[in-house]
Length: 229
Image 1 (tube, rainbow, N blue to C red):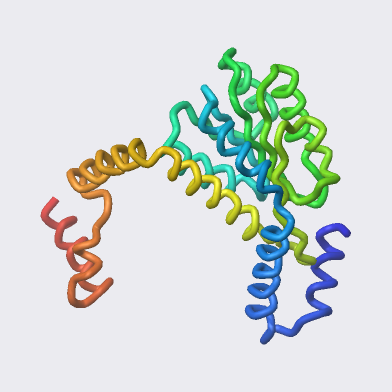
Image 2: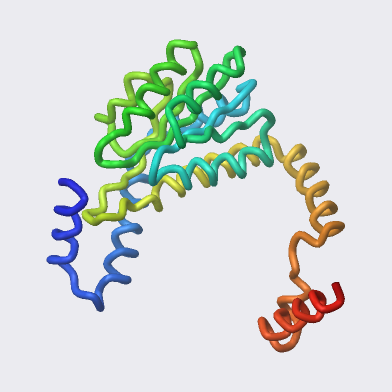
């Protein structure tokens, strides 16, 4: 079904008062189905491959871009040479992939009902350059699989204009946690350094938010500070 047909099915099946419960229950089911069917050997292989890679490219197209951004952000805390590829244009994908001639690991997320040609072409390009490709997608029948060294399946088939990305996000969380467990000493060292930097430059305003008066007190402090400036 296209987006309009999926929206009509959803709106014809539930009432306004049932939306919250229906959507959350559907997300719960997607996680359960993903957990029962995911290939644990492929998951472990993906972890080892990410840990051994000289360079990691993370790509997510369209609605999957937030997944790629999330994964790239946390991988950067625990791994070296992680690049979240800008997907605004096809040329940017190929330019980034080509900029490093060493073999690396390419991780792709793809969950639309119709698979993006940009993703498939980028996968073909990476595969031809002998990169190890890890895909996270919603079906064993995905055309991405022909280029993948390792395929992780996470269910995402909500009948709505919005694809549920809860299950793939959980798989990404699991990958990151597993990598952290493998690199505990390095992760602790990195976080200790970051905590010092965050504290020194007051990245987080925890003390302000806990002041009596809540947000009103914080806003007043902000106004006072702006006045002093």
